[in-house]
View (cartoon, rainbow, N blue to C red):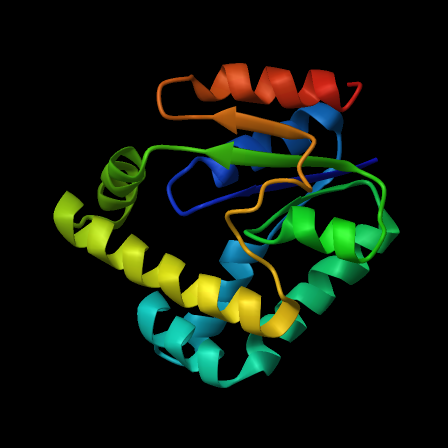
Length: 174
């Protein structure tokens, strides 16, 4: 079984992805953690590392290649901004999920987990998302706002994580 969970920062993909993997008895691979780890290894914040990734396509390409290889093995919940697109572009069968959420709510969540002011988190999210949109289009011809590859689009703005988890587990046949 293969499930991809994608969404913008603060939408709840990590919380939902871990729980879906647990409930379905699958491994969980979080592309965001891998990306954040790469940034930390270089002593960079995400905005700076994102800017570097714009100039060095190998950063994103390698991350996505690793996710694609793991997808081919199956029995995993892949969580990354492009996980659904990776499944689509590489021809993998699986459930593709996008979790949407209001930008201000996402900023509030990010601020809470990172100890930032919500306005600062919103500006950081906006810069990060703009950087990613440029890279995804340049590297893969992907418009991140195009949700057509996704089988299931859920909104986490007001919907509890447990409801999202149950919907995904049900759609996956678990």
